[in-house]
Image 1 (spheres, rainbow over the protein chains, first blue to last red):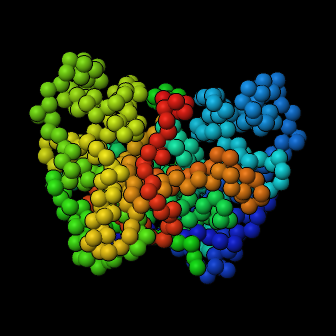
Image 2: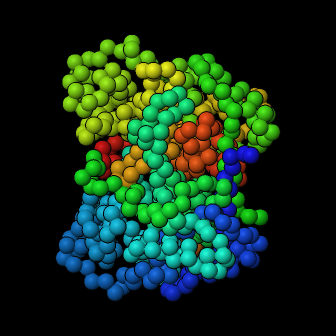
Image 3: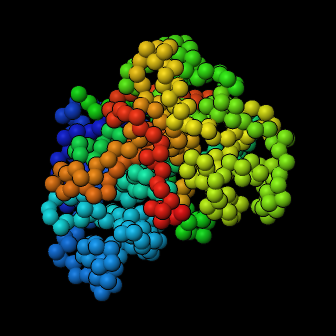
Length: 251
Length: 251
């Protein structure tokens, strides 16, 4: 039996509106596409459509920037209303330099603009925020798929993050349901008998990255099925992917 | 036509020795496994076997630590010989704290222990170093596969890196041949007409992460084929994934 994983993009998901039921949209689209979701598939959902369904969209026209937002936006040639929304979403500013704002979100993610993003949102001056509780968003989709299709899947909510030292962004997990996001090898012996001391793979991030390869940014494929990866089931939370600030060398 | 990507692990690669020809090992293994490599497949190779083939293995028994290595290893309860090798491989120490050494390698990668690693190397006290020129290593494998199997592929050499703020490691690309490591969307319009300003996806890193999912750390699968991903061909170099230090907020 070949060790083989498949990543399948789900096409034909309509523009998501506030209140849309993502599990239903998935069920309808795969039917049209003539594919099935199977037990132990992993469904990766880009957070953008989750944010839209949950109403986490802000109209910048309605935002009045604070004095602080006005001041720092002037220096950085940023839209002061955008800066205001970023500040509201941020728990802490990690770096503010060279036109960039790297901030920690309410969830503990460290990313550009505290996750506030203008791309792939309908309407001028509309921006998306991260879901309030992406683990819960993932669980709702998992439960909805169980109800509609009677299969047990894992769900990952993904976003696109930059990182220090390396150019380009990659997709990472910001919410999970039904799988342990980390595969911990510490204490296990490698093939030469050496006991691994630090190896713990962030498989949820690798799965999110793998899914991005079929999603792209312009192809209207916000959802992918990953089949054939034997994940550890369980009540995993995205929290286990967030390093406590005191343990981090770059906080 | 479904947007679909397959990741296939190559099994049965024997223990790689200095001088081993990796393209030949791949050709032999896929034959036994009954699979073919096709034009435009991406071959992801874990750097460990490349380092072994290129003789980038060090016997710590033969290393005499410097006074500096002795001093810093004492404070950190690390093997002073290991620290000595790390210092030799490092161009710059980025952080040295909490038992960790985060260093910049000759290539410009910022990672733990300057890429020096004890796992999956045969023999007590043996450690592996990163290949001297991973782009060249990738090109040699690409050329070898062309010669042996008459197919044009892209090759990615991967390693497992940690990152700030997030627990767990993911696989990233440290060398490429035949593909552009970044897919740049800047200046392109999204589906709502908004011009993307910062989006450039590090697809080589996402491909390396995707491959890790079939490789694992204990399964003796050091190589994976990724099929169905339409990469941008070209004379890409890993250099385009390395952010210049002056542009980085965390250097």
